[in-house]
Length: 113
Length: 115
Image (tube, rainbow over the protein chains, first blue to last red):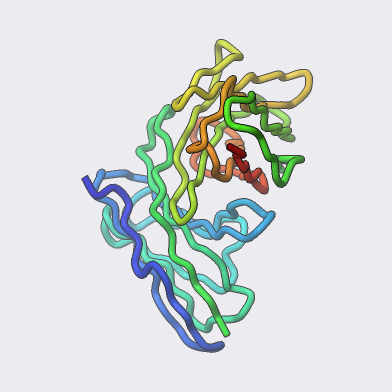
């Protein structure tokens, strides 16, 4: 059971470059989300999706795009990377039932120079 | 808007000693509260959650937490710490059942365990 899989684990970008962080889950979870983790700030929600074809903004959406064409996949796109986007990114998913916990991937560490 | 404060950035505790991590939240209605643990290089794992009912909640790995509405707190405790408990701990609050997906996290408390 793979759970939530994020790729890559590490990435270094130059300012202005674009890239896509991949997230896939094999648990048939309706809900998926992206967080960024910065020291002393906990995790902040970037974007989330409650099902295929449906996405919405979280707390810090600027500079990021998402799409949800399938239940399994929820990629996060950085169109023009900035140093302020240096962070650790976590993808998480859950079923929509009340008592369902969030399942987290192991994270992608992104550095923008 | 909901918010979560974890006042302690670092806590050092001796192995076998008790541990208490503080969490204070701000939210106008009944909150849905969670504690997660993050080991180095890993994602977050759910320790326990509170939705309603008994205010003392038992979780995995011997952890428990107590919801105190009057103090807007949800402190995490463990009676006897093991070296493997060294990790970072996050408290989180969800606004409602449906919006429980949209969690607001505290800044985290890093726990160091001395032998």
